[in-house]
Length: 111
Length: 110
Image 1 (cartoon, chains in turn purple, green):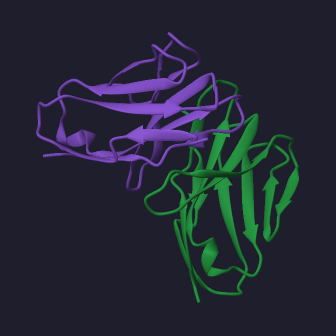
Image 2 (spheres, rainbow over the protein chains, first blue to last red):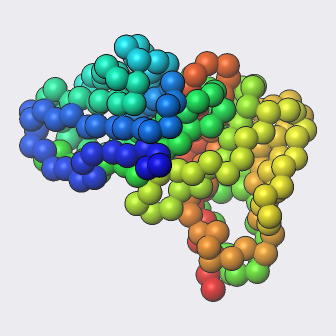
C-alpha cells in the first residue's frame, strides 16, 4: 500500500514550457486535491476532484489544468510555465470530508 | 475568503519545555484539523476536532476546539526533538475544501 505517490519529485522548467504532474493513490479515495505551498503563504488549493471525471477550481486555479480520467489518478498540467509557478506541489486524497492524505510533493522551479 | 491565523509563526524551545500553538479565525468551521509536516515531506494528519469545546489528547499533544468553533489550540507537554516540524491547522466550513493556516514552525533543541 503506497498511499499517495507523486511523479516527478523535482523538475526544472524554462518559462513557456509545459509539463504534467502525476498523482496516484491506491486507497480507492473519491476525493483528490492539488495544492501549492509557498514560503509564508501556506497551502493553497489549486483544483480538486470529487470523483472520476469531475474537476473543480480551488483558490488559485489560473495557469493550471487538471484531469481525472481514472479514479486513482489526478493530473496537474502547466501549459505555459511562469516563474510565479515555482513552488512545491502537493497532491492529496481523501475518502471523507475529514482527513486528507498527502503525497511527498514535487518541487518545481521555473527559470 | 475564510482565513486562519496561526501564532506564533516561529517557535524555538528547549527539550522538556511546554508550548501552545494557536489557530484563530473570524469564521465558523464545521471541523478543524491539525497536521504536522517535516522537511521534504507532505503534511500528516494529527487530529480532527468537530464539536465546539472538544478536547482530544494524542500522547503529549492536547488539541482543543473553541466553543464557538472559530479557534483551536495545540498544546505540547515536555517537548522532544522529534516534535520538530511545521504545524498546520486547517478548517472546513462545509464544502470539500480545506482552508489552511500558514503554519507554526517549531524547533525543539536537545
